[in-house]
Image 1: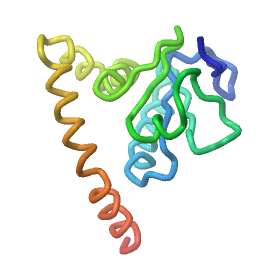
Image 2: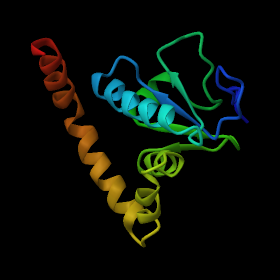
Image 3: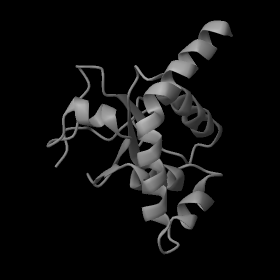
Image 4: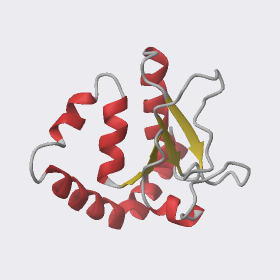
Length: 138
């Protein structure tokens, strides 16, 4: 059961809600890419929710801190995906990126993606500092 109403501002049904960390510079960049794809194609029905916004509802059974530590998406049926599975669900909802979600069906692909994601999470703080420095110089 979820506390998130799965509709966007235009009141269309939403297939997926991306739960993102609005304080993370890399997350904001990824979000802008997804929003751009969604604007170009009306068939992508994704809602974006900054988990730092205390007024925004979050799924039951998970904290805002947990949501900020890993990438999460909430499917319209209430299933919460995390890490590699969340990326696969997002890619399946984005036109032009669906082939990546299909690649996730290859045996062992989810395991491999999750392993890469675990490595990324370890270096994420360093990468975030680099992105902040790049943004300052741009």
